[in-house]
Image 1 (cartoon, helix red, strand yellow):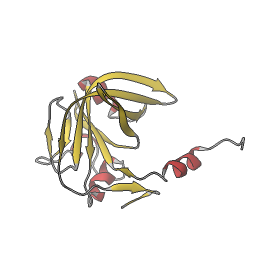
Image 2 (tube, helix red, strand yellow):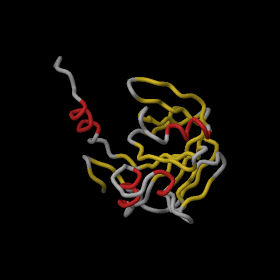
Image 3 (cartoon, one colour):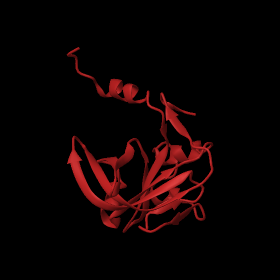
Length: 159
């Protein structure tokens, strides 16, 4: 097998993994910003570190840099409208997606979804640029958890 994997095939391949749907958020000088996370995972437990991939063209990257933080917000089942907004398919853009009362903060100052399944709040440690993306490494400084059921991304849809 020496043929190259193209982007469409790549997305199909990683769609085979079932993952919790997450919105990554940060507070920048222009207000709150966020995006639908396509890759957010742990790096280490000691120290507690998370990593998130952010496309260089993602508008929220500036807020992550300015705020020196990010929060990974795992969304509950039934949040299709919210996911659509943060995935770029909705009518709201930028700070307008952060509806009053639906968002709070933990320790870092990044916006956190009040009705989340859980939030992992991170202080930015390092940004690594590779292949049109930035890998944001963050030290976990706080978290919250609930008993809500998670929305799962699997094979291009939600379950």
